[in-house]
Image (cartoon, rainbow, N blue to C red; front, side, top):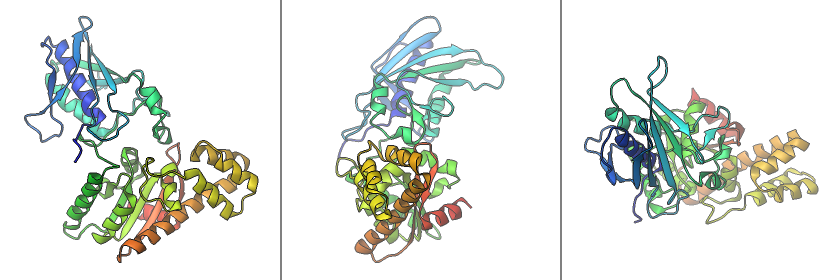
Length: 370
């Protein structure tokens, strides 16, 4: 089994604590103790590289992200956190987070993109070290983060300019590794043993889906991150008594299921534009439009260009894709399990808006929201 590593919020929190220790006049230590979860008492040692004062009320600490042995975009990412004192004011929180270079912001607001876990982790570890009646400003910088962001799907969720500080737990979830599938199966087994079982489930692929789903009114208790193992996760869910399952994901990722690709990691298979073009041809679109879809740089670009020329055709096409995802997923289940369930798909675009849902997906979304 690969060595477990820590998510980006952990390394940012470690650098933040090291910088605050410098402001408090503490000597530099190569590790800091972090309480990674609310119930943790003694803390976990997390390494930092350097920390120093920059003046009477400013300090900087640095570290590098180590997500463990598995492939991860953030491996070796430098992390700089500058801490400075801030006067407390009525109505303003004691902790202010500011994005530096390479840190993602929510395009609609310009605010730093921070998950609830990341913020809680910072507050839990910083507040006990803060002098009375003192506020703290943190400026987070990810050198090279803007370039790495181009290799993510953050823009599909409205996050631009850099890497988002998201994560729902301390340890890296191995979305492409076999132990991630084992974790999904174990969690499904745990839920099945609850009184009454767990007949409803919302499967998402990554952290962005976990973050977005509650904003859409979906109960957090129904959410489960499947990583890229969507096919085996569907089978495991059916075998553990799930009877209503909603697939929730970015259209540029879930479209692979419409082509029968049920492990969605890009190292194994792609074919997204080919799938889109094939569905367009089956829909009866002119050859010129099908060729334009196939030659686009991404699914979003392809659908966006089609929408400019023929909005109705574009909407019909993405609706068709969602419906085919439901059909192919049911066929996959039929090949690998005797269990049956109601399965729906809901897709999102780059603006974090629902772009389409299959017939079952629409029903389940409304039912789970209620």
